[in-house]
Image (tube, rainbow, N blue to C red):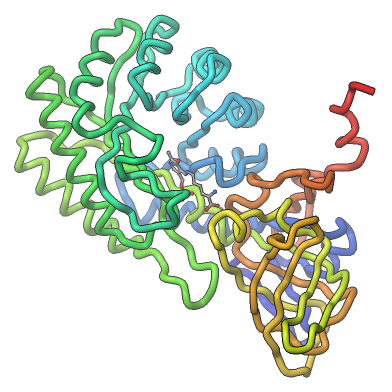
Length: 421
Ligand code: LLP
């Protein structure tokens, strides 16, 4: 987070709170979220993309407080389940700024969205047109299209190419639009695409945008309707380690302006209203995770394993995407030289690795505190209770105060659902 400093005693301050105190008060592991960093990112996005709707992708991290911040900052909110919608609903999130996503929305998801009158539902398949159509009354919808553009990211989060489960292929989209137009309960207002996550190449997003504007022209020519909205998804990368490529937001803004003007002119279309849907880029940098070191094993000639009190249950990203992180010993100052160590979790798998071969002081020992940076997105939201380890709390820091947003999951919580003795 931006207001983060490491002082000469090794104390890490985030949002005006000392992290050793947060660890002592709330226990470890703990997710910490800096409200000011989230709000600052939201404002940077709105300022960098004037006239563009900025929609926060709640799958990155959604709590009631986060939903409130999103509403207050004037962003829209992407939800992808009845559960995420329930969180938005509980804080009276403006329904017209909600967008429902999902490749396999259940009847419950659709019903919840229609009940709350969400502003837009993004249709992902032709089956969904016939599921939703009969239930809906004047429901605004977008059609999600696969633009056949490779975002060059990890295959598990690459969604612009033909061989993946999301969206309707470009070549089938005009017919699908016709099927939507045939449904009296649905009002087609635009197109959507999302080519992947942790994208660093803005050219790929620009190319997808150009293709979708071309599709707007084809739909006009075939069906005589001009769609006003173009949602080009999110996926903007963040840096997890100093060596990572960043994301050029100003560059994207510039390219989008150019592409919109050129393609609209070329196809003699009014420029559509753009929406972007970043999740990670808005919240990743607002988060850090605190862990306590439980054991250190020096295996001569092999490696040093530093085991902490969390692991793949609070952060499955290294196992899922080969994700890498920046770690810091905090709470004391060490003068020892740094050596490569592998930070592992407490779970019963050799693959439970948080960070491989990262530099840590040679005198690291049990009881030390470690902070892992850039854990605001897809950490709390991806957490599990593997090995029946309760999920960590989420603590918000702001202006020198720390407060619980989500409490730690207890053994009692874990036993509550186990009702079949
Ligand atoms: N819009 C749609 C339709 C999406 O599916 C996603 C992410 C986003 C927007 C936001 O993407 P973002 O800006 O956050 O990259 N668990 C993975 C990421 C999964 C992304 C899923 N969809 C990870 O931890 O890297």
